[in-house]
Image 1 (tube, helix red, strand yellow):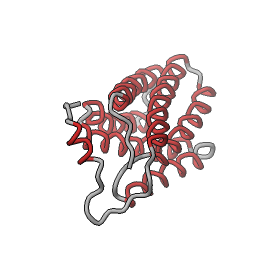
Image 2 (cartoon, rainbow, N blue to C red):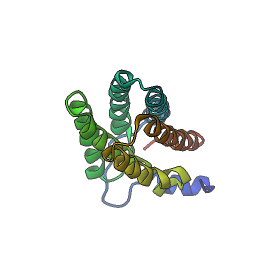
Image 3 (tube, one colour):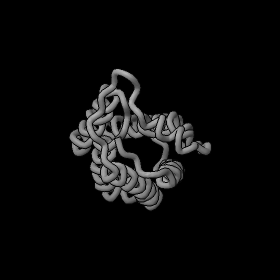
Image 4 (spheres, helix red, strand yellow):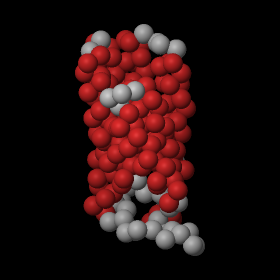
Amino acid sequence: MSKMSREELVQHLTPPPGITMPPYPAKRDKIYRLSLILLGIGVAAEGISGIAGLVGAQFWIQGGISVVLIVSGWTFLVWLKQWRWTVRMMVVLGFILWPFWPLGAWALSLAASAIMAAKETHCFHFWAGRVIPWYTLALGVFFIAHLSQPYLGIVWLGLAALWISLAAGRSKLPLFEV
């Protein structure tokens, strides 16, 4: 992340003209940050379960990740209401589809998380956020190509490392309040 002055940060947290934001208290930012950390841990658990061949565990871990993404999607700070609601709809649909169509659920959940990573990078220049959307796309291709489970597990661990790096960078910023 590039160094931002306090003034740049305050300016960045001021909605553009014509944009009205519902209140975003610091408590919500804490919850968002915690959800990003839990996302990284969940994705790591998905990878470890894949390497170990624990398909049943992966199913339940995906459900847990879906819940974490609902929390992060609902506490995601972005000025444009359309983007807020797009991410929220994607994570909720990902959770709803999870027991019936895991691949579709992953597609929605990972796409929503990639949007969040891209927004974080747009605002705060996290290197991991530049990589996460492309890495997520590659993961989707590996899913479709039926990459064998241990190798797919390694790919999941790479995604976990990226999310943990982004969450660590986000945690170094002051708490946001709008």
